[in-house]
Amino acid sequence: MNASTEMSLIYRKPSKQDGAAMWRLVRDSGGLDLNSAYAYVMMADLFPDTCAVAYAGEKLAGFIMGYRKPSEQDTLFVWQIGVDLSCRGEGVGRKLLDELLAREENASVRFVEATVGPNNIASKALFLGLAARRQAGCTIDEYYPKSVFPTGEQHDAELLFRIDLK
Image (cartoon, rainbow, N blue to C red):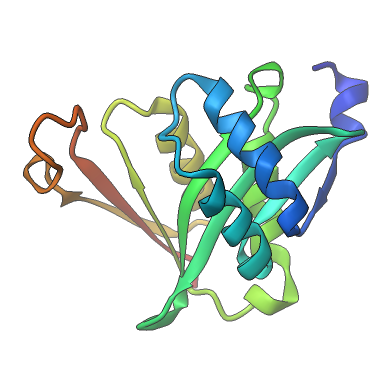
């Protein structure tokens, strides 16, 4: 992707029609956990206020899926961010996150949380960058130890990033 393509990206709320493209982007990424196609359709349809997509024309450049924690409505939990291989390194993930947090319906979000695998350098940089841009505190703790995942499942522990925006 070049600078002119980046300027032409459209960031918006998703609809259920975006779910299949989100699923395909993750499937083709090679590094993200692939959930069922239903999960992407459902998140895009039922949680559009806390999800976002970025398109270059008809091509999905990236997406972010999140939701407000039911027990903590001031906390946005970011479940997954996916950026097309051709768009990586262009700030698409950062802009998706910023667009989501700039929405009026998310004005009461005080905390952003995400679990990140210990080897996921891009996600670590994204969330630490958000904290730095907002001059916000960020705590990082082990949240899901490897032992909670099924035996035989190759899954590292997940670290919880918790950013205090206010």
